[in-house]
Figure 1: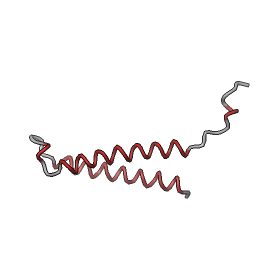
Figure 2: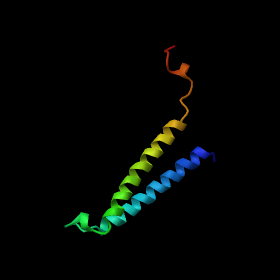
Figure 3: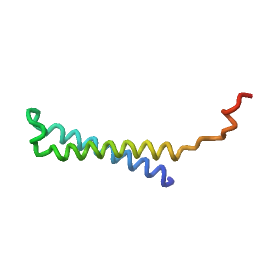
Figure 4: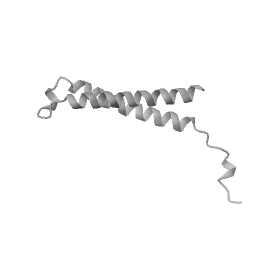
Length: 77
């Protein structure tokens, strides 16, 4: 396993773990007054972490992909 595959897998597992943690925190929030709940700060941090991890997974996958030979699809035979 090379470093790109390992990093994509690790980022994806971290993304799934942070989504699971967000769901657990979301269920503990007070629906009447969300901003005064003691879990509100964790909720905000986990949303930022989920966004960052999703962007990182997409960037690593796109930048590590092999575009192939340009002559195969630029010109019709």
